[in-house]
Amino acid sequence: MSCMRYKGYVARIDYDERDDLFVGRVLGMRDIISFHASSVPALHEAFAQALEDYLADCAEQGIAPEKPASGKVMLRIRPEVHAAASVAARAAGKSLNQWADEVFEQAARA
Image (tube, rainbow, N blue to C red; front, side, top):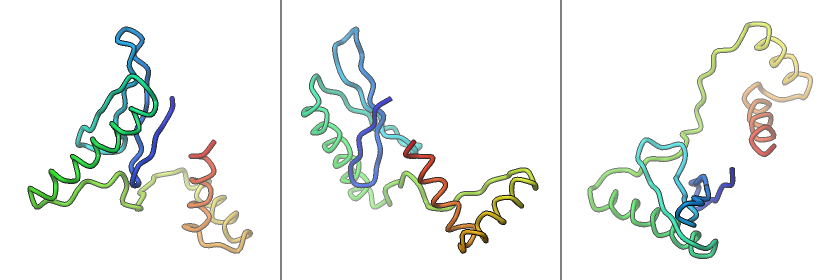
């Protein structure tokens, strides 16, 4: 899977062999924002245009655009994992939130 980023939004990019097109879809939202193009430069333009159209539609309707993430994560994990994460955070001299933020970032970039 390949991804593109624009204004804090991330789109998954797939190749449609049948139609010989790159197809993109913005991730992490209930609203469906998709786009396509036959070349990578055109795909970048199509992504930007699709997102700008979405943002303009939201402004026209007087509604806040959906954000891909709020920054709040609610997790249920096993108590022993929670305890081990708390110890690891303390050992690193960080709060559990700071530690988890770094761990999530590292995992997301892998």
